[in-house]
Amino acid sequence: MAIEKVKCLIIGSGPAGFTAAIYAARANMNPVLYEGLQPGGQLTTTTEVDNFPGYPEGVTGPQLMEDLRKQAQRFGADIRSGYATSVDFSGTNRIVEIDGETKIEAQVVIISTGATAKYLGLESEEKYKGLGVSACATCDGFFYRKQDVAVVGGGDTAAEEATYLAGLANKVYLIVRKDHMRASKAMQQRVENTPNIEVLYEHVTQEVLGDANGVNGVRLLKKGTEEVVINVTGFFLAIGHTPNTEIFKNFLELDEVGYIKTKPGSSHTNVSGVFACGDVQDPHYRQAITAAGSGCMAALDAERYLGSLL
Ligand code: NDP
Image 1 (cartoon, helix red, strand yellow):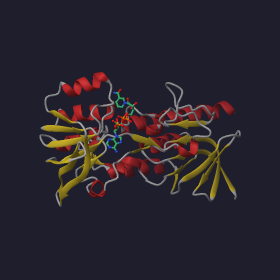
Image 2: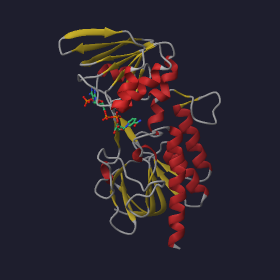
Image 3: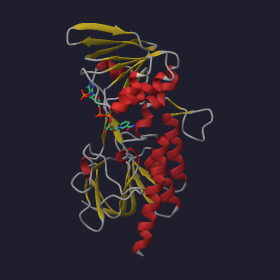
Image 4: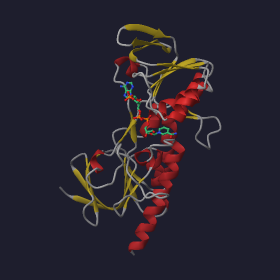
């Protein structure tokens, strides 16, 4: 297999990857960016984005990603379709295999492969994705003002998203599969103290209901026996995310969930010349703008690293 040598390789095409590409291209690092399986990343699955600075009227997720892509291309970033299938970070140069058929040897690698929200795996959930089913309350909650919505999950994210939505929606059902929540006590207390949240313990989602206008209810099974239908127009998943780090685990330090560990306040991983940015290293904020900010950090860190080699 022939090896192509590049100065800067960026893996992943969300806000982090494209921002890294913009900065790297402007710094004459000739970045090559592989877009991965979901070009544009998670934002391409949302509709309106109202909280990305610079768009006073809002922008759709796909349009925002197209704008970032074009901006990176304007400065000469080489954006390619392809999926990183394996890496070898054992030598001085970093080797990344694309689609199992092309090898790239890079002086610096910027990883921005993101995280994937977990879904329940129901057919009906898939059917109404973007039509009432969402995995991001901060992104989509605004569209459910004064409506009734449901959040599924029992961890900190579910508690946080339910509380956030309670500030916008008329009523929030929090669907918890066990008889208790896993969220921290403080978060649980916030949920309990919010009058328009109703926690449905020991309820398991069976089906998301809807019609051509989108979601209009959820069918639940209570304590394994009784069927219950709640009328909601929004169904929010908050059952965790899976960082896309499988191919890196033999070389990079990951936390217990699988997020890449970066040195605090930087994008440096434990391998010199390999940097991580965006959701792949961020279990906390997970916003497009924080991902973009960390993409900028990664490009600056990579530029300084390359400068130190001269
Ligand atoms: P967690 O993995 O902590 O929780 C996932 C929740 O989803 C659990 O309650 C789990 O139920 C439930 N769940 C998983 N699969 C299903 C399913 N198929 N059906 C129904 N329920 C399901 O993920 P989080 O995203 O909540 O948190 C991730 C990490 O980020 C944690 O460490 C958390 O503390 C942290 N975090 C911190 C915040 C903060 O400090 N402000 C805010 C958000 C996250 P079960 O309990 O039954 O397994």
